[in-house]
Image (cartoon, rainbow, N blue to C red):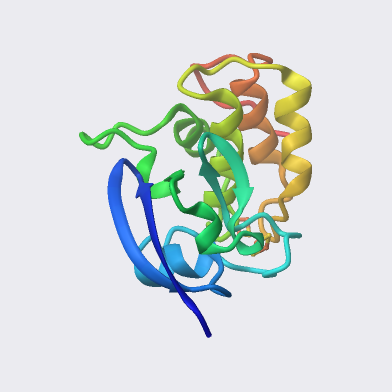
Amino acid sequence: MSEHAIQLTINGRAHEARVESRLTLSDFLRGDAGCTGVHVGCEHGVCGACTVMVDGAAVRSCLMLAVQANGAAVTTVEGLADDDGTLHPVQQALRDEYGLQCGFCTPGIVMTLASLTGATPATDPDKVMNALSGHICRCTGYQGIRRAARRLAGLAPTQGAPTHG
Ligand code: FES
Ligand code: FES
């Protein structure tokens, strides 16, 4: 199997490696770069758990090869919070609205919503809600996740007690 030298940025840090041509980006991020917040579920693009940002766009890292990320800026869930521990607005919204249970699906959902909202908690409501349709969660029944998404889309208050249901 042929190997290739790649250079990329992961969560703001330069990274160099030699990778087999068949290695997926998800396995590279978990195994080589130590980003175990990248969760691998279905391994064929259905569940969304492996979603990361590549040059700012949400990407299913199980469907991308590591060599294809050569020269890119990759962000995983580990790279979202500030250095002082302040959560990204998407992380905070999911936390406030009880949008997770076991947490397996959560990093992927966080990265998809973060790719849409950036650092500001307002964006196109349809886009935000539709983006959730690409993620499978076996625990929550989606209600807390939807509340968080609605909050991020500016459809619900950003402070105060969460409204359930
Ligand atoms: S592990 Fe990539 S979409 Fe499910
Ligand atoms: S919180 Fe468990 S799969 Fe979503």
